[in-house]
Length: 336
Ligand SMILES: Nc1ncnc2c1ncn2[C@@H]1O[C@H](COP(=O)(O)OP(=O)(O)OP(=O)(O)O)[C@@H](O)[C@H]1O
Ligand code: SF4
Ligand SMILES: [Mg+2]
Image (cartoon, rainbow, N blue to C red; front, side, top):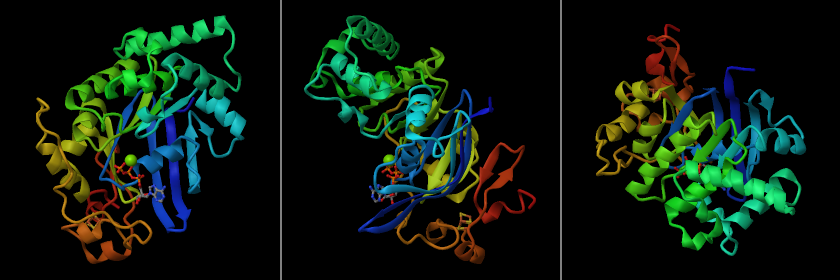
């Protein structure tokens, strides 16, 4: 057993279509340790959802993995056949909850019947017998209760649930198999502040209850990232710019882009009375059909030097080895 539940090595993922080629993930590498919650932060368009779709093993039709590897629990998911991906990875090891997934519930089916459909698709066998249905409903009831809902929600239609309840139902369904890794994209973005807090608590409870082991948690809501994640990864324009503990990234950010994000985090109100936004960062993210040369952040960076315009900085490891950032300013600090 490897120490990492997820290993991503030099991943490249591009959208190809009539619009051209969008280099949405361009050389991304990181590991996620078992038992850890890692948050992925960054402005809109940075590539967070694209990364999650690639990690899920089933990217949408226009998104292509152009290079690199993804290992889930040691399994190279782009080097196995689709049946093995379904049975060994998706049914046992990893679950992916996409952005806006609460809309994925079927409006004309009760939650319980929708769950039977999902189980049928996952396992490749339609759920027919009374015994099997009872077994699945018991599992589902346990999960919705862990997530703070009454098991009677299983008898309701989606329109009878609030946004927060729908989101928790989707998570309960996605974790029915107790996946080791949960990849969850913006679970709080459509919720009000009270429902957001409830959602964070529910996710942490899933981990404490042993239903999930590790989580990749994507959000541009800095408050929820901070409440939930021990590790953080900051993305900008399809690249990882900083990886470290959440505390270090917030209190002592290494990368100029993380520092600008940090300014937004600094205005964090622990009582949750205001929402942090990233609007304070000057300029806007680049068009990834034609990204800037060198460091992709250089047109917006207050410290840009000549080398930044021509040469992409590698990840420099700083301190005891647990922190990394991709910025030429760190070259001397990292002793390279
Ligand atoms: N279906 C698509 N076709 C073409 N380009 C796309 C598609 N989906 C996303 N992109 C582009 O890929 C890049 C990364 O987008 P992505 O949705 O991964 O960002 P994100 O960090 O998840 O943003 P947000 O915070 O808004 O969810 C952006 O430049 C975006 O315009
Ligand atoms: S490499 Fe250069 S442009 Fe990029 S963040 Fe560092 S100083 Fe700024
Ligand atoms: Mg997204």
